[in-house]
Each structure stands twice: as structure tokens, then as C-alpha cells.
Length: 260
Length: 268
Image 1 (tube, rainbow over the protein chains, first blue to last red):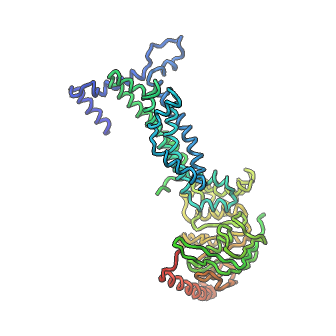
Image 2 (cartoon, chains in turn orange, purple):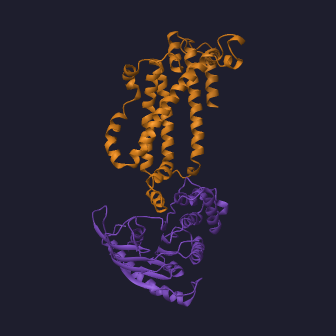
Image 3 (tube, rainbow over the protein chains, first blue to last red):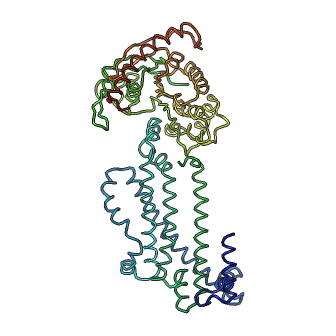
């Protein structure tokens, strides 16, 4: 309701001529630009490939796919490192004491601050962008996994050992599932961070993707395209968050109503 | 089918520990108890008498500072599935369904899939949990949760069952139903049971033998055999005589507990 009213107000203000289209174009102009951004750039030509390939040949889909590829690659690597390390650090006090000081120093450094190093180490293109996302996804997953393992109620460990479980079984079948609510919320934060970082890194190191495109649009004063790009980022983020929500819902069937 | 119950020998067991406040506490001082195979023993006493400490020593989670505990002739050195534990807080794995909880110990034992499924069915039926098999613990009442916990531990067929105030958090009706169920299971399966409670009536209702413990340091104050036939009737005059006698002993210890609390010495 509120978004519809807001867009109507915005459109009314634009139609009345109160807004400079260079600064804030009308919603209709943004919508049109978004459609052009989404639609194929060339006429359909059977010699160039199938109709489906033509349908997805638009610039927006390429940009979105590029951004999504970087987000997912970086997230999978970052979470893939943070999760096992977090499990080990959470379960093993000595390892925790050994590594925690380092983690505490590195954690507050925003991923953005790694940009110069990333370019120095990896040059331009996908590698530095993915590296930054790895950093952005790693710490939330690591911290939440450690916290998740450390809060596991000792009575579950005692019950498992009493039923004959060895260390590995306790780790795999008790600590890991008991920490899942924490781990999943860490992953949700991580994917959010990955989204912020991908846009920034595309503005600097890559020449496609949604972040690159809105910066490019600025060069040409295409404010309608900037907003169309931002809108696309919002849609993509919402889509990923909905998927994560579904995954949470499924994996935490047992947990619903237990949160205090 | 099930393993024969084991004897428990407790010899000169002491347990000392230091509280978070830095006070040294002697929780157990020289406990000697010989429990016969298949015996149903209740440890009775006010909080702070060391009855749970003794149970934890038998379970192997918290070894005694001094003395020795043997189960079936073997010295206890750590926790093990030969001494199944039932906790007041149920300790069911909330991420597993009822059937998965019961299957857990069987999987660790290394049974094959078909054998596990058959055992799970058997215990679901025995504790009348059939329709709850795919529920998660959060969707069950306290009484049902404790049934699942008992089924889970019985499924691994331990010769000894250690129960730490297992029905303490239940309402009176669920409590009575589970007491009856436990007596039935015990007489059918023949387990050695050590059952911690602070309810005098519960102890008389269940036990072959009631060990009354003193408040700090924990020692054996009385060791009483209960010979009334089961099922027991709490309105029976013999029941009430015993209740009065045990009540006097427990209340004397409770008075020492209250005295210590007033003196600010207790750290429960």
C-alpha cells in the first residue's frame, strides 16, 4: 500500500513538472528504462541461436548474472571456510584461544578497506571482486558458528555421550545441528554483506554487473537507468533473502516456537 | 532378549568441590552402598544432600574424589551406555523427531537399518508413543517428552538405569502415569534402577529400597527396605506409617539445609 502511494505521489510530482528529470526522473521513465534495460538489444535472428537465448540476451540479465555469479562464488568460498573453522574454534578451547585474537583484529576491518590490496594481489576482473566478497561472507559465518557451538546446552552433550556417542558423533550429530539456528542467521548476514560488497567492487574492479552499470549510467547522467539498476539490485536481494528464508524455515522446523 | 541387570558397588565414595564463590564443599562423605542386580533403589533427601552428585558419580560424568564405584564388577571410569541416564530436563535432541531420538543410540551401536526400525517400533509401542513418531519434542507435553527419553535410553538396553528426578517437572497426573509405567517396564525388563527424588511418596511408591541421605556432607542416614506388594496403594496404613517415619528423617535434614541457608553457607 505504502509503496504504491509513494510511487503515485512521485509520478504526480513529476507530471506536474516539479521535478527536474535529470535529478529525479518520473517512475514511468524509470519503468520504461528498466524495460529497455531488460529487453534484448537486437531483433530476433534464428541464425544467432534459439529464441530463449535471444530472450535472455538483454543487458540487465547479463549484469544480474554477473553480479549473482560473484556473490554466490564469494559466499560459497567465504562460508565454506568460515563454517568448518567456526565449528573447530567453537568446540576446541585451545584453538579458540590461539586464533581469537587474530580474528578480533581482522573482523572489524570492512571488506571495502581490502580493495587496494585486492587489486594489487589479483589485478582487475572477477578475482579481486570475489576475494572481497569472500572476506565479507567469511566473518559473519565464522562468528555466528563459534557463538552457535559455544551456546550448545551441555545436557545434550551429556545425553549423547551417555548413549555411547564418540567425539566425532557428538560433533556431527549434536553440536552442528544445535548450532544451526546461529549458523543460518550468520549466513543471512553474510549474503547481505556479499551484496553490498559486490556492488562496490563492481564499481571499481569489473566492467559488467549491476554495480558497474549504475556507475556507468552516472557518467552519462542517465538517472533513470541508475534508478532502474538500483531497483534491480533490490529485487535480486529480495529474491535471495526469500530463498534463504525458505531454507531457514525448512531446516529449522524443529526450532520454531523455541526462540526466546 | 534384554541384558541381565547389573550390580552396583559403591565403596568409600567422597566428593569434594569448590563452588564458584570459592567455598569448599564436601558433597559426599564416605558413601558405602551395595545394590543388587535388578534392585529398584531411590535416593531420597533434601536438595544439597548429594543425591544427584552420587548419581553423577555412578554415571561417570563426575568421578568421585575418593573411593570406588563398580558396575557389574567393573570400575567406573567414565560415562557409558551400560548406565542409561534419564534427566529431569528430558535432554531430548530438539532437532530430531521422536523416532530419530529413539534411533540415535541404536545407530551408535551400529545396528543395521532394519534392526533399528524394528527396535524403534517396539519402543514406540511399549511407551505408547506410536502416533507421535514424527513429531518434534517441542510439540509434546512434558510427560510425553519423558516417555521418549525413557524409550531412547531403554532402546540401548542398559543393565542399569540412572534417573535424576525424572518426574520432578511433571504435573501430578502425568507423574503418576509415568510412575506406573516405569514399575511395569522394570518388572518386565529387569533393570537395576537408581532413582533420585525428593518426594517421599514417590520413593515409597516405586522403590524396593530407599536410601535417605543427610544434608551436607552427604552420608547415608537410613537404608530402608520397602516390602509392600505392587501396585502400591498410597492410602494403605503401612504406606502411611512409612511415609511418617521417612518424613521425620527427611524433614530433619531439610531443617539442617534451611539452617545452613540462613547462615549463608549454601550454594545450590
